[in-house]
Length: 440
Image (cartoon, rainbow, N blue to C red; front, side):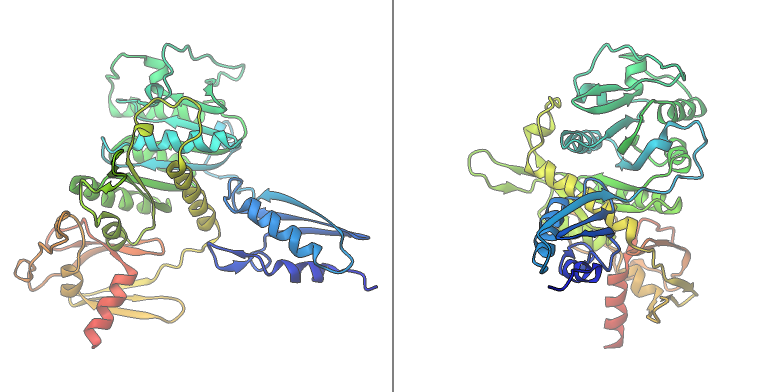
């Protein structure tokens, strides 16, 4: 009987396709350390992130595939995850050096449920057995203590004078609210930044798979301090379907892209109301919001969370519902996908007539300034409720031209126009459509 080889195992495993990349796990380099001992085969499957939702499916498929090889009767699959390189920007004493992935949950506008979403995502992954932390960096309005019903706690320090986080149901939590209680935070910007640095870098997080940072609303000094001193793996932007929230989504995207933090996707909170009696979805703020989000920003909409009691009650340690579980899975999948995808940004050329994008694969797209300005899908140019275009051709001046173009990851460009408009984001797919339409 022919002795099985490593090539036989690799050939069998090529049939397992990663749904995010549409490639097999061998081509993606996930298969490691193949060992064959008689009729026994063992190997590792190294995923992009520990909480990868397809982990159990990959293990099951791998066992079945390799057992089908003649001469193999026992298969031992070890599921591992890739270690992120140690960030050079972190100082040697930073407690964040032991954290694998740091994810910012941002809204850039208060009142959209950002802290609630951050808390549920962190609690969900902790309930699955992963090592998870949650840091509340909203100095002026910390809400994490209330969300977890943690009051009147005394924060202590260890021998290294690090703050010891509060643990609840396996989740490590730190908030400025633990330090000041119900007292108002009356302090200026530089002092706020110092406190932010302290609770981020000087909390004894220990070894963590994920640390979620509940970002304060806005795009000012505190937010820039966090993005510039913490090696963020990515950012999730929480919004609601309302016009003012969507305007701030643009600001958040531009802020993170300017400091090279990848956008993992959007979560639309309070997307709809699910009636207890008729179980019908009522879109209070408009039914086309999810489609509009993707059209407007070119970024994946990770989840639509409805108005529901689960999101307003204190977290009691129970697992989230299906919607929260699915949102957590989507965030983790986006994180894993981003760790492999290379940023393929086009070269941008602009003049008084047009903007041209040129990719390394040879693709070139040219769109006139006027056509691009008129195509803006921002909340100032399109009616949120009806989808009706509000920007008219007469409102766009004849000499419209771009003053600044910012490349936004693999999905869009942001443009500041000479008429003062700067809240538009132009996805590459929309630019290609414009260029094609101009030729026909």
